[in-house]
Image 1 (cartoon, helix red, strand yellow):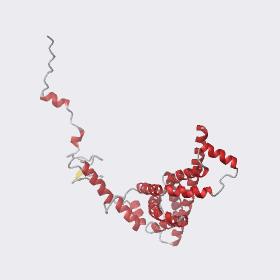
Image 2 (tube, rainbow, N blue to C red):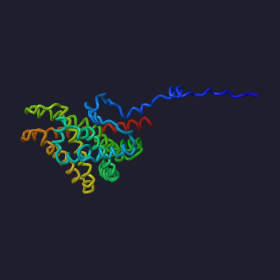
Image 3 (tube, one colour):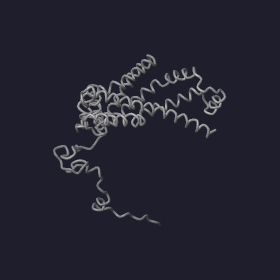
Image 4 (spheres, rainbow, N blue to C red):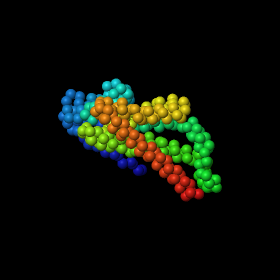
Length: 301
């Protein structure tokens, strides 16, 4: 008869040694700051302002914190949006001066504007595509009909549709990283050069804050108004977009730059130059997108 070996009993001391104290048990009640190690001052860190946890973080509390941060009229997203509509120059000045806690980061605001612009673009994408393809079909894009036919055969679609696909790709990139490097960065540099020449001693980082917040708000405004003006015709839509790009930096100018007309003209000139590089960047991305599309089709064929 074979008997099973009997496992030795685990004593209390051995059980305690085998179960290490989990790191989550030290979240509540700690004396030092989890963020910087600083001393506690009430419910907050005396050095970095990080709040101490009195209870463990539950899911509903996480949702409440998110909603509170988004809708708080004294700080965060809603506060920033309201102030960007009412006193954008003051927002930029506050942030540069060190009053940053009530506002979301200017780079975050730019990407939020870009996301809203992309959403608005996709909302009208089908109608825009049909409208542009019909317009392109009215023109002879390539005069050599044989070359045009070969290129369409290579791409597997009509030339107008291929060009429209490349245009959509360029526009979407223009609202994101292309806009960041072809509008915001040149805008910040031109503002710094022009206004520094008149005695306003800005740093490039400070004018970059103005550029990020301004371009982010331009994207917000053109996205919202564009959903309406798009259906009113191309001319009205173009007039709306051009007006927002030209006028909003002038509105934001107040409270951040000098109030003189010379200073305003310099901001307008910086806006115009940044807009030119922005359009150029989109054109380059359009040409590059179409070239890569043809190259890819040639390799696959």
